[in-house]
Image 1 (spheres, rainbow, N blue to C red):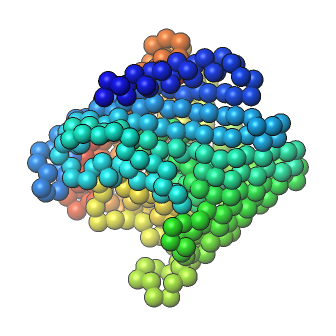
Image 2: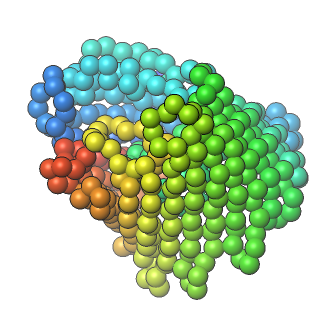
Image 3: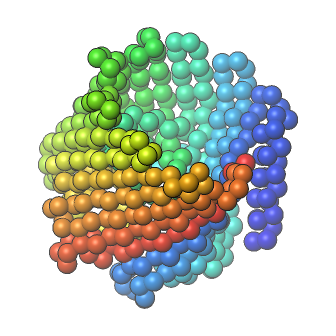
Length: 386
């Protein structure tokens, strides 16, 4: 264990030196982060108790190497140390963390014991060729087609969870992506992400353009044995930002027990007040949304089912109290579940490249709600960026 921590520190120091331009064509950056997490949840048997402590130490390393003027190699990875009650008491918790949804399994348990383990996974590992009109990226990458701040049914390739508080980089996917830029505001994209089971692959095309001050995109393709079609926009009404995403998913399996068509629509608006208060509101309709239960420790989010209820209303605000203090509050209301999610947080700039963040996640719902036993989370993070 001590050896692993020592290696992390060496990597961080080496990265700091490389960032200082030891090599003109190589850039290394990242952070070292410590996060104790307290979880209160009624987990199913045979687990005992309803309060758990977990200790996480994470090292993020981002490497960008310019092989030539138009070609670069991008390698970004996270190495995480886990210890605490969850490791001790949850069977197969380590195996649950060691999951890699990509076409190739690139993650592994670096070291472990009965009380702790270290997990490594690269979420970016690709070759990127970029010219004035074309860009081709091959390998693990992030294909970000989402527009809204909270819910993104347009994000077919690597949608992220709004509840994941310690993963700002968001996941990547193994894919081939070709982008052709027609002019400053128009582009055509084609992307293909294979899966270990062929029917779970994703292949789609996007056409983006600007009209009357709105950035618009139209999307169509194959999504995990479903035909997907829709699009989104981003613009403004007066001084307020106005965004939206709409997608329809049509099941190609005639014997499927699920509904043949699922329609998802998410509309959002944002506004910055004169005192720097930034507010976002979003309304979501997910025809097939809703689940019988919700597990706080990790629920998969997919583009064709990005919410835990049919209707969902989200409000989020952030405000800089001082140059070093910032606060935020997120509230999600699930009317058909009679449940609510509340997440206040506060951040403080301790010094140059060092930040502290405290976040709370609270789920509450009626006895018939999927969120009735979802639980609560309190996490504190100290992060050093290099």
